[in-house]
Length: 324
Image 1 (cartoon, rainbow, N blue to C red):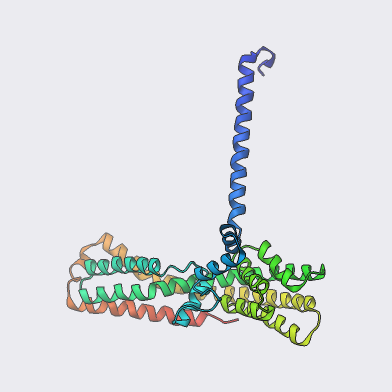
Image 2 (cartoon, one colour):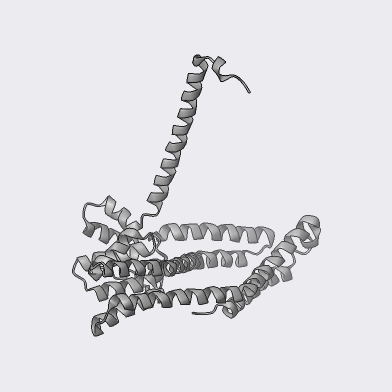
């Protein structure tokens, strides 16, 4: 062991200062990371309220960003597409969506034309991706958002119950969820709380929330509030029973997902296997497909194969997609 008594102070003091500087730097970085994580969990409604002077302006701009008009109604003539945009929770940017879809369709069409041939099928593939790309993407995002909202709803109802037990009115309990919960449940409850604060009845506000969410568990919560308003009773006890029901439904969904996992794995394997095999053969023996790729029959059969594969995936999805 070295004798530290022989170490000069001119060396020891800079070392101590360097260690302290490293410690402070690490602490600062951890503080920045923690603050960034805290800012990420703030829901969109609170972010809008920080950007605008009044709650009314923030509410109107938040509605417009979701594809609604200033009164909270659907703004587009295509009602089903407007509902899909609202339920996805994304900022309404149709030009950006269709621009990205057009780029993906152009790449796919050019790839088909280059490797398979035939301008007709290539244009058809590009047009199909252009039209269906945004719709499929919005459906996927909306499905993930509804799933997350369903997972957050029991915790949100517990906050409402605790607030009611503390003596707060229902509108205050709803606004408490809007302050404490992240997206998507925080923004949806926050929009309902803002509508109540500007004169709308609680029943209509939560009914609009259910229409924006599109989730059956949220609709069950709305039905509970509507029933309590018409018949009376202890809302807190009703919401506790509602929470138990939602958790049991989530448990059943997980059991169904586990039971259908084999079908989903089979669908992924059957879908990816032809592409993997074709790619392997093309790398090992390029002439295997290169000698027949220009044949007219191949150009006709390839689109048929893709359509047939899509039909098979659709059928397998219907077989394993159980509604709860």
